[in-house]
Each structure stands twice: as structure tokens, then as C-alpha cells.
Amino acid sequence: MKKILIITTGGTIACETTENGRAPSRSGAELTAGITDCEITICDLFSCDSTDITPSHWRKLYNKVRESADYDGIVILHGTDTLEYTAAMLYFTASHMGIPIILTGAMIPMSEEYSAGGRNIRDAVTAACDDRISGVYVVFSGRIISGGNVIKRYSTETDAFRAFCSRDNGSVQDGAVAYFCGAEKPPVMKLPERDRKISVIKLSPFTDSLNVPENYDGAVIESYGAGGIPSQLAESLSALCARMPVTVTTSCGGGADLHEYEVGQRALSLGAIDGGKMTTACAAVKMWLEA
Ligand code: ASP
Image (cartoon, rainbow, N blue to C red):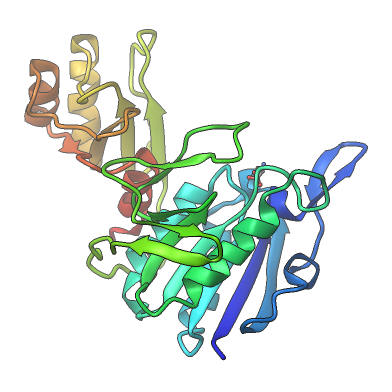
């Protein structure tokens, strides 16, 4: 029988409705009752809405994951709002562990009718037990998506996540992995010894300066389409690039290519880094990890 570690961190999947709104309170034992086809160990690591997650939570999770390589697989129950950041952190730091590390959650609490939480947990455990899978993946609504390529696309749909570039890596159907094509593994990165500060800026036609506090270590600018920086921000970008690394990403699936347009090439010539196929979350986490 496979040995699976389930780490809970809170999120909607574990929520109960209180008079102040949904708040996570259910334990891993409650959420996984009824799963009998593998040997489950529960670790209730913390319990928060993922909106509250900070790099200090990532350290706890990273340490727990890294000390758990003797399990056949790890399932992490997580809020969906910042799941793509946590998935990116583990993608860069734990993909090489040689076991499946699967993140999942739900859009409706398991305490409520119509929740897909039970299915998502079972699918995640199925993926974590599959010998073909190693590395970090999000399993949600039957999709298997690389932790380095996942984005929350919908705030109301049960099927909330999509692959940012290219296709899903696989699917779970009727309790089995229907197909799987593994993602490329990134070079191993370690957590930074001190918490680096990364600014994430979303461009709009109103953006007329790039203000990043002095004590920051890097910036990610989420641009549009193929990526580019408006001419009115050229001076501001040049000054920022002189102080810290600046990566330009895009809000659009498919990723950025700063070589395509003049507005992108200008950003490159001023010192910006092309975010390419990375989501904004991935680019920000990668920059945080780069010592
Ligand atoms: N606010 C919740 C969270 O991210 C949403 C969810 O889990 O779906 O923790």
C-alpha cells in the first residue's frame, strides 16, 4: 500500500461558514475520512485563508515537504487564491525529490453541498499514488497542471485553474490517471536565507511611474499581450533596472515575448528581463528564490 502524506494549510476546502464569512477550521482527518486505498498520514501544518499566505508560510511548508521524501507522494490542501504562488515555490525547490507533490483545494467548502473538494482530494491522492508522476503538480477538477505553469482563471467556477502556456499535463478521470505527460523540471533552487522583497506591479493605461521602495530586491511588471513597457515609463524603467532585476510578464496565457514589438524591445534595451512563458506568480517567486 502506498504511503501518502497529506498536509493541510486551510483554504475554502476546509472552511465553515461563520457570521463573519467563510473561515478554514476543518482538520485533515475530517477532510480525508473515507480514503482507504492508501496509508495516509496527516499533517495539519497551518490553517489560513490563502490570501493571508506570506513567504514565512512557504518556509514551513518547504521544510515539511523536504523532510518527507520517504513518502510515496505528498498531497497539499491549499486555498485557491494564492495556490499558484505556493505551487511555483515548490516547483522550483522540490521538483527533483522524485515523488509526486500534488496541490489541490476547492471552490466550495467540503462542509457545503456541491463541493468538488472530495473529488479533488481523491484525484490528488490518485495522482500522488501514480508511479508515472514525479514533480510538483496541481490537480483540480480532473486537470493535472504543472506547478510552474498554473493560473487561477475563475473566481466562481468549480473548474477554476488552467495551464498558462501549452496544455494540461494530464487528467484524472473516474479515479484513475487517464493520461500524463510530465513537465520539464527546473534547476533546483533553495529558499533564500533572508526574505527578499519583491514588488509585483500590474500595468494599466493609468500607470505613470514605477514606484518600488528602496529596500526592495526585485520587481515583476505584469504587462499586456506579448509584453512591453509604455514609452512614458521608459525613464522610470531605466532607473528601476539600475537598482534591481526587473522581469516583464503578461496577463495573457501564452506568455510574453519582448522581442516581438518595439515597446518590448525598448524594455529589453533598458535592462528588463523577458518573463517568457512564466506566469507573474512564477516570475515573482523565481526572483524571490534567486540569491
Ligand atoms: N479565499 C480562499 C483561499 O484562497 C479561496 C479558496 O480557497 O478557494 O483560501
